[in-house]
Length: 180
Image (cartoon, rainbow, N blue to C red; front, top):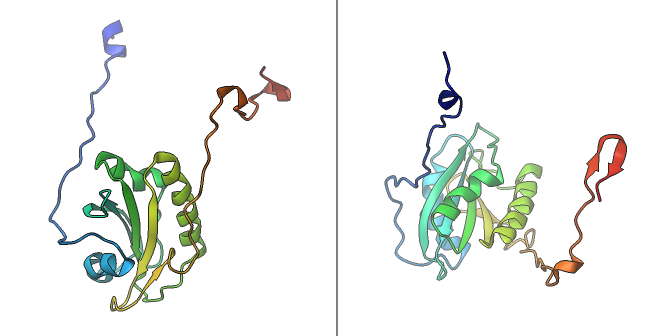
């Protein structure tokens, strides 16, 4: 027989950042070339698409690398909530996305471009700017930088300063009646 206490027992969980084997860098990541020289070598050895997040301190020194999504030969699903999780836990000041194209073709797909746009907006809201999204592949001699190619620009979001001026979308209820 179940008691009232049994019905309301909840498991307690914890979210922790767990360290794996390091990837070494002795200097800040001021350019995409520096990021690719450290991360690209590892990424180019992979036989499927992988998306990782490089979390950075304020001076662009890397804090850590989070391999957030491992996909298949020509696709890796990545959602902003999984991509930004390690950045929040790492207290990152900014981040860079890096993913590999095992085919060696560095041209971004439609989904790559859409992810970059979405992450740029999410990161702006979260206060952890997305500095670049890099695609590596093949022999790691070349890469694609969304920032360098002008595909990506950090949004300039402005926040309302007067709470009386805030505008929220109307909430809709059954039969399209607005809640006031």
